[in-house]
Length: 167
Image (cartoon, rainbow, N blue to C red; front, side, top):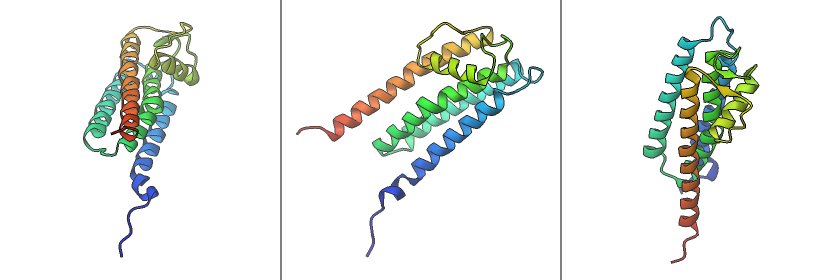
């Protein structure tokens, strides 16, 4: 007699993927935002920005083509869009360096992470401002935030409508 999969078995790959994204984004932010001023700069920052673009494109492809369960898709989108993307953008800002080389008013990794979340959510308090190449990066983060948060809300509404439809 064969038993059907349990909920944990069904969600195991999704939970592992989510944990991997969270851990990878944390270490990217932790490592890149702590580079010395001699190491950080345009070259490291540009390489980190290219890596970020590759990550976003690959994750978008994965979500659109490989994840079939709407609930798992919503969960992965929520974690990656709300936690992972701002951490990765913060890692890229940190890779460009401090001392007003990227974000005026940022003095360390926590400031860069705060700036990233404020930019991603398009709140824009105005206490920190990007300069140089980071201005373009901040615009890209704000547009990414609009799109990804909109996709997340749309997916949540679609899932709700599908599970609560009256026929």
